[in-house]
Image 1 (cartoon, rainbow over the protein chains, first blue to last red):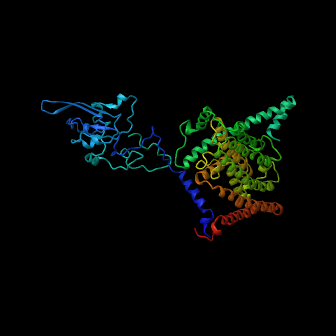
Image 2: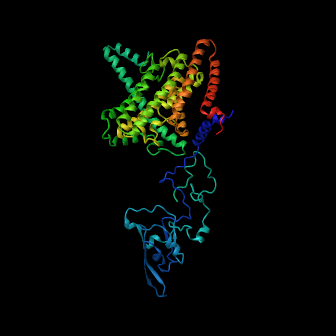
Length: 183
Length: 370
């Protein structure tokens, strides 16, 4: 007598769904809980190194939309000083061509993704906002030297592994506080 | 004597006129029963959405109020404010009347559901017949909705519903007769009082048949063919919006409340139980039953139409007949024996019958390998 034909399949299915009842929900409640994105992502952000930049404007030439605007003047030692470095992120598609074309690695992608603004004018990023800072860090995209220093990560990480090494065992109730909150 | 009748008698001793002593308790009872049903419907909506989400490893609505308990109210408000669209070529009167015909019987059934030893709206001596009669009315409402919408998918869903409800009415009634035979009465309160041992133990097969039949009667998954959204849009309520849709939605959950209460009353001992007050025991049983229904919904895929009819006529119906004869024989000849022997006999019989009947649904009686 084979029990496959006598409703054992239904019992198996019911047992499976019952087990799912005790799994922690996969839903990410977005504004409160955020996934920790990969540090190697081509994010919606550009990071500019003012000291590395020579003002050669290769990035501006490589940009398919012509979003990058650079104005320079010659200093006494016959080097360019960058007066103006503006990126119109409203038209930018974050293709990363400017980053790939930069001969001096003075431009990198960041890993932020919440860059919406209320006014179009705020989307045009000035020299001061786009330069590297504590809040604006380069990702590993097309920058192998930076990538080497980054910690190993899976593509999407639920909780912040950098902040909490170890002890991230999924349990039924205690997880929500341990999840990464913000990047 | 029910509490309401006693209240009426007490009003008469206060020299209230005859009609007032009749009307006032009745109105009070209506308010209490309506409040109970509607509150339970709202809680059921929340319970189903949350629990189904947990079965699917989701969270479910959790924004409005603690654990999202006010979400049904928000949904209700949204639905109330929506535009009520009536199709141009619809049969306007039928289209308008259908939601009411679906929803009203649910409230009517609660007249005979005992919430406590004497807490029942009307202790009819034909309570079970009343339940069976009233609960079939909503099938008419569903067909009215399908016909009045003047929409082929609505009509398809409605016709499926008629076929389904008529088919599953038979095993349901036959398994009910087993309960009535054992209790020796048609009154719901007498049936509850007869369950020193709940009838789920005395008639496991009858319970299974009634439970599955009830799932089909209230059009729940896996028997939700009449609103199969992957096949016929939304079935009979395709053309409904606004408050009329809300009536169907409430009717769906109201059916669930009703059948949970009836199954709890007929098979699980109703309000009976140790320590806790009767209403709490009834609610515990109702929610346990509803949990199983949501569990089944989260697990089972929808049946095909021919499988649905085959299941009703080839499996549930003959098993219900056998169950009825066995119960009748036990009531007739095994009156003096201890009930636990009957429990044993019926459990063995239930397992044997289910195994034997499942052979009918295999290819070539199980001889053909797939």
